[in-house]
Image (cartoon, rainbow, N blue to C red; front, side):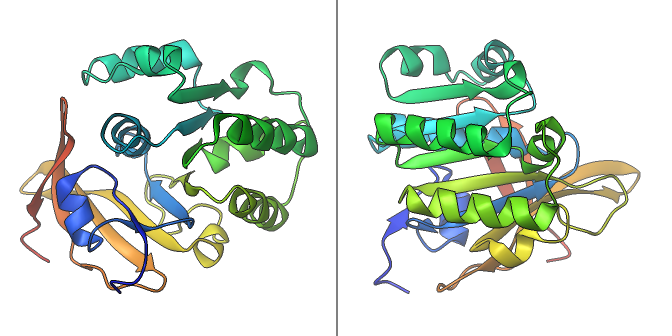
Length: 231
């Protein structure tokens, strides 16, 4: 729907699938198995947002340390250290604050986003967050709190969820009902070769391309797509 304000991801083929980008201000779930490229997709969303569209971004990680994340991104020619030094990107590393409770975690996240005036946010990942919290929280409660808090920031957010090998469930089975949209990354075996593919499963209030697309990860671009034969 053309009247919606769009937030382009910066990945051309994905933005074409989204009819121009993600509807502004929504909370979107990026789900996939190990090695599918979820973190890279989230990083691309922030990197291109800062470098092409002048939108500050916040990356919140529960999976790895900030220095490891920046070193990994440098292999794609994405200099997150430089963007961080310029104040265009902020990285919160919760690997060193695992003993915080949910209230403290969310307060710190929201305050940082407001200070940065973040227009884009990536939470990597909700699965790791549930494990890291000092006070264990039911997945339904956690998802509900995240949904409310992230919406209050008035920025466009990606929430990453892990899909175990061999499972058809997305995240904990709750996130897909709360999220405004779902982007699924998975792997298939074709002629004894494992290949990666992406599909948009849900996007509230807008048309989108529902077909599967095969992709490879490349430097500078991040994701390069070709139509998946079975689509």
